[in-house]
Image (cartoon, rainbow, N blue to C red):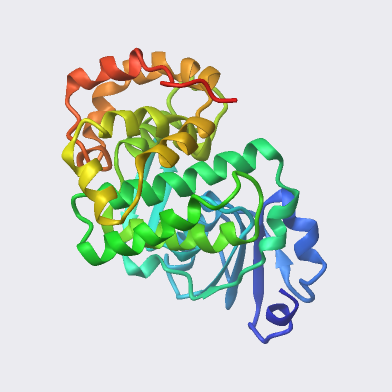
Length: 298
């Protein structure tokens, strides 16, 4: 960050999440801070935050006169800083756009920002990375070359703690970039549908991805793609299922089940659901309503 901030970026505006704004100000000499969504009149926008903030910055910088976008992720998980995908919340629905246009002009790595993230939020962010990697691996749109690349990512994920580690930022970016080439699946179909529905408990995208990963993987085990993809990448299912069990939050899952039942048809229509590794039909809802972890987690 010190090396980046000493460069000449012209007139510079900063959008920063409140949790990291004070740390950014230490280096932001001559930069002005603004609010997400404001009209921009600058040469460079520095966006420091999570996926939602960075995605809004992508759209803002490409809306009129081109503005250089510098993306700095304050938390791993979404991988928005390296993705050609934009996910926007509009009128309670997710507006998903895919175009190389959305890639930031400059990506700055500042992994120390994640060191103060609390344990629960960190674990959920790890679940977001895991869902990107596994759903990209299982996607019918993934090429053999891409599947092998994702397989190496999953192998490294199995060695990582479900807690802060500076390497999570790189793995998050790699998993998201790979997923953007392949699409995701039912975990994201559920998360995108339930995030903003009326009456939803206060839980974000990463929490939903982490919690629904285990039941979706149990569903995917019914299809041949699950076995074939793991064998192709020399991966065993037991350690992967064990991680998904550690990410699962039974109370959060139970709180969202009534909403999942109510919104199930919307989940089935979501583009992510349609690229799930194992076909999802209306009757699959019964699997989720009756799901319990096969083995208790210590």
